[in-house]
Length: 588
Ligand code: ADP
Image (cartoon, rainbow, N blue to C red; front, side, top):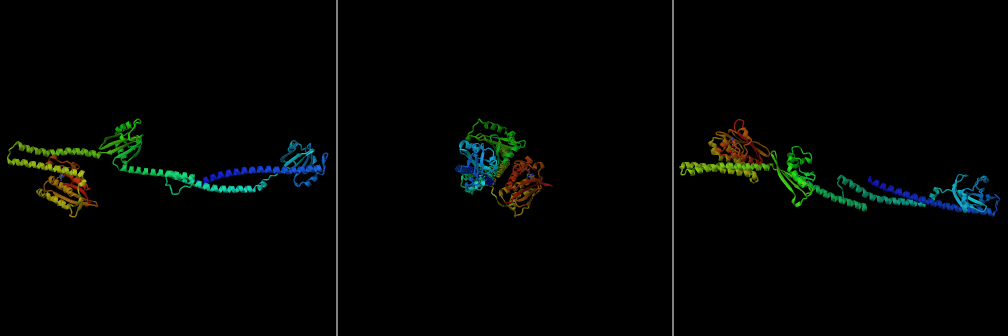
């Protein structure tokens, strides 16, 4: 399309210029031809004039005012179409070869050619004849007694002229064709470059892929085209690289747990990850619609103060010591850390970290430490009390001494249990990976636990039913699974009372999990406590539990151990009587 129009344009210019040029040459030629013809005519007419004059002189034809036998002059003159007029000095026509009654013709003294001849001896004029109506070339010459005027029809016909200039026209047409063809070829090459440049520009504009395989034609436009495409391609490569890097960065940012965003000097967001958007919406009391809303968040007061100090134009920043700020925020149940860095170009970064878990853990650890301290204090102060009694009452009877020493031993056992439980829990929580997993036969494991408690079970007249199939095996840690059943069974023995029944069974199974039920027919637990019994040190009845020798960590250990086996645990009171634990353990 553009190829055509470009060519068409060049061709139109060419044709216009060529036609103007040709017209100019033709006009010039025509003028020259006219001039030449006139000169030729004048020469011929002068000859005829001379011949006529001589004829009149030699034959003494002029007698007074009459020219005799003038008609004879026509015989000797070769050109029959020449009009001959003899006019006397006063302008009276003495003879006219074209007009029979010439004596009645009007006075010719004022004819331009006669006037000229009067002044200069000879004169010519081209005009239409009043007598014949044709255009004539008049030529007149003054002699002593008269003027002789000759005239021929003046026709420089275009046809004649064209005939005369045929060679010239053929030459012009040939030139036109040659120039036309070369122009066609040249414009072809030019327009190829231009078309390719146009296609390139369109594709680049629309961001379409550009084929670089065919080079531009070897001309100046082609060189420009090649240069432009090369510059463009290297630019595009760089932009593509940048886009890829940016994507990588974004993917990386999105994989982060932190919310991170970059802002321009004018506090316009340039880049952010999805966590950032989530967090600022948690931090804000309303939905964040524009970048401006971000900095209106109440919790960002401190951040704004920091930014207003460093985004100031007067403040110049050193890349090696960029201003940083960080503080923590508490919104309801959640805790966030806000960090910001201002860069030398006064753009800046805001990072939001959800530290709820860490913070809660910190608080929990704090609480736990004080709980542990408290728990340790009780048996320790008992031990101390018994030993004091012994020392203060020394010497004391042997049976009393034995009694106090037995009590001291019990308390030290309790202390050991407590320390063991705390360290086991800590290990599960902080170093779960260290527990080795291997194929474990659950039924066998439960039988072992049962055997360990055999005495107490018989003592309390407990019916123990292990319905777990011998074949059930799972990938687990033996000592942790042992702890699970040990704690559950021990609790039943401790809190269930006499003559209860313990049932352990597999109630469901799917591709990934085994689902177990552990139940006893003891008193169960009041509903209001159920949701909390997996918490550390949570006890339903403090005094009684302690008396039973519980640490308050048993069920916390059970829950953590189940979770380490990718399972879950819940508890409920049975409809009739007793407590039931439902838990799952991953097969692999
Ligand atoms: P402890 O080590 O003190 O036994 P646990 O975490 O094992 O602590 O148990 C928490 C509380 O749940 C106990 O204090 C007890 O009151 C109650 N409990 C646990 N198991 C049973 C059960 N089978 N029947 C009745 N109450 C139970």
